[in-house]
Length: 601
Image (cartoon, rainbow, N blue to C red; front, side, top):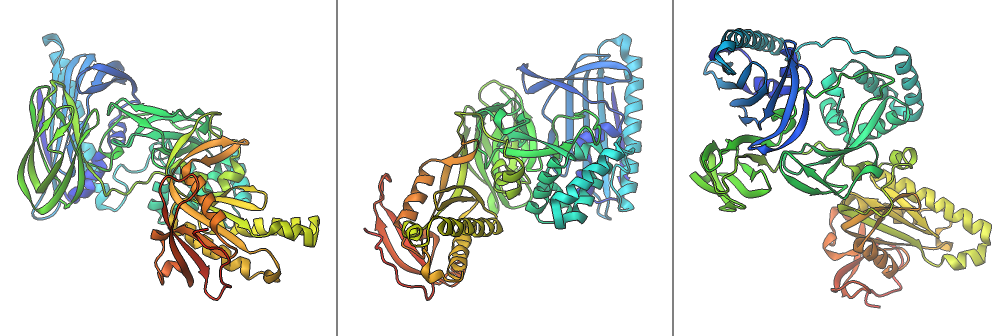
């Protein structure tokens, strides 16, 4: 049977879409119960078998990938394995009205398992469609009043005493962040379950309009205070959902498999591992989920998704906004898609083991026809490449001073090396420190070196880096990018030369290099190794006192990021252990004494 309804809403289409796309909250608001999902391998496009309770009955259904094109339509279809219905399909189409507002067309189709069950299924369909229409009206009224579409949820179940104790500890740990700490505690205590069951620090920082690292650091302090607990998720590069989850870094493996996308993912701390938080159980009991295992809200970078029939075709529309996108099909086949005003109005894609053509140039809203060549029912997506990720990656977390201080127990499994896509490694050393010990004596020289470590650590952290370790009187630090590393290197030279009696003390040598490397556990702490680390150390060894040696392409004479420092030499140099010669540059503070060592030596 089919139930069709229409409703005219005053809310803009984009606002309604954002609310309806959150299928977790939509299901819960309709009275849905949490689902338990197990993997499926033999049901075509369906990748999971979900089980839940509806009106007291246990229902199991094949969870097929949803079909959507934002912000125009959402289609959900389920093949039901147990229950009075055999098939269920819900379609929501949103049309923008000329006078403003949105018309929502709802179509609910339910197929009974037998004729005898027809009256029950008809009554249930009428009940569900009525609930949906009332929910749509309420959402529209809430949006018109400027409040949250789904309204206020019931008060959370919290332990006030435990919350107060955690706030007291957090205020002590966070220092000047007392006001933000109270706000975080209030959010943990009062926000809806679905907002705190998977709390993403960067997403919450964006929502609150504050600097991301500031809130991430506070969340780490909140874990130590007993307010939150964290876990590490390995994200699929296509759907951006968790392919694997670990309570501690030590539980991570070298690879994970996304069952939804049928992709095996090499674990990369800078790209694929995200830290997420939830209230500590002693503070708040969060209702177990999920209410929906996939949907537009969980994949904000996916503009459109559809199911490609086995041996058949499907037609979708290109995005209406110009930009760079990716067309992907389950299993990993992809084509690049550029939407421009000069693009074609139509295109056809053959979907075999690879997609042909590999590059598409289409006009906004162009028609894209896709044909299956593997005789397999699969889902496909159009993904926006310019989408700004809100994932706080494991690498970014590890650069925070609070992580090193409060989470020294968070290390990788012995013998496991995980990739870090790209980092900037900085090595420092004190030139002539051996003579310093001979001249000042061990105690005075040691005190000087310790003061140097304190100063170096403070400047590295000011530039969003992290001191990994000290080796004798040298320091190894890591940064997320070259700009911060170079700024820190210049600041270190400036601070070192500004110290009282600097002329009589050892000068500072710095080497800086960026590239991929691996994270490992060494001496019971996170460390890095690989060619990028080796080269950075070679560049430090090539530096003279007062200099920074780094790849020449990172600096240009007079560039503003040199902050008054000068490029004093460029040369192509063969470094020991590096297969090809490198173009290197020496950088020195303006007015500093001339160098004493040539790059070619």
